Image (tube, rainbow, N blue to C red; front, side, top):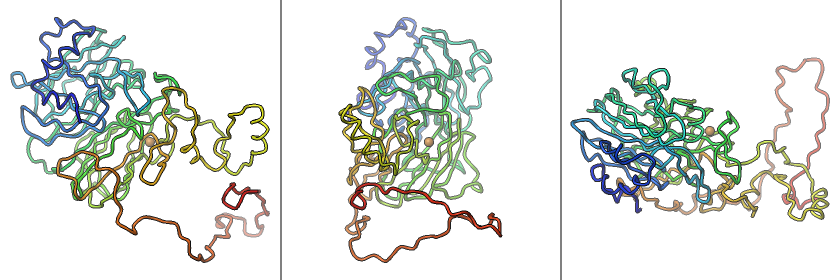
Length: 475
Ligand SMILES: [Cu+2]
């Protein structure tokens, strides 16, 4: 992977490499002379972990389809430079969204520090309106909390503000605007903050792989590129770090690795995040590490709005394991939700007549929606397919908040390269059964009986069912 990260080679050598990127910016380089040069990222790939080049050592995180912001150490203070600005984010190949973010991307870069670090963050506002950054979950002086109007004046366009505080407790946190929040968060402004423990912590275990990402959502009309910022609930793009499946990278682990995944929710609804093939425990929230007595095995954890959950497990089962939001509408991309259910409705005679008038007319979903995954349907330019992704066995039929945990026995330690699809041992894949079958058992009950009036049996009820074409030779 060729990346700016590799090119830069760490936190210390950023200045010379990135002068060009800043030169064309609206903020004058004179005004920025005393600031650390802002590091920009223009690739949507998952960047390798950024090993700390200065300060206390720690095991860095990997931000899914994201990166960690390098810093400058100055008189014992870690200095970061965030630039709030419009960005173009590739949400999945072929679909670019015009968002607002930080340092070239939405979400902004992950900030990684160590418990006890004194941190100074310069925030340059290149948005067309005021800005302020709130450091979600941090213990800090009130005036550093980033709430425009309440704890600080707004950062006007073109100006730089500085925040400074000590990262007091270890854990996973977020940052996001607290100025015109509805608009700025709907446009993609947010980022992760990880504070590593200073010494061995009784509730924080070392792990082999430490992934993190944010849940976010957008409402972008098919064929357009800018989110509708007034949408409150009916979003059409459910994303992880502003990427939608198949644009979300897989999580790569070596078998028996201890894995931590940190997930923050900055959407307007909850997301039950579900992992196949393993059980995990919730080891932390944005309030810090959870007591051991509160940890129980789960395969799904619900992450409410404004919350962070940190899950951990030992990846002992080889394979390609689905990892997704369990709200099935959140594993779909842009679609019209107001479409009536057509399953079981035979409208072919109607369709035949319409086709004589409109040759391309196509009826959606009379046999379920899976056909949509294989349909060669013309989409407007710059539109993500609704359900997509192709695996080794064909269409996956997913979009949105979906990825794959790839567990491999021979994945080298610390290697994040995609090993390709899992090679299933012979005879271990579900297959068609062609021998004789016994008649399957069927329930003859209409429903529960405990609530039915004792004397009066339910009236007979008839429902006309039409079988889908194809399964029994059609009509
Ligand atoms: Cu969801």
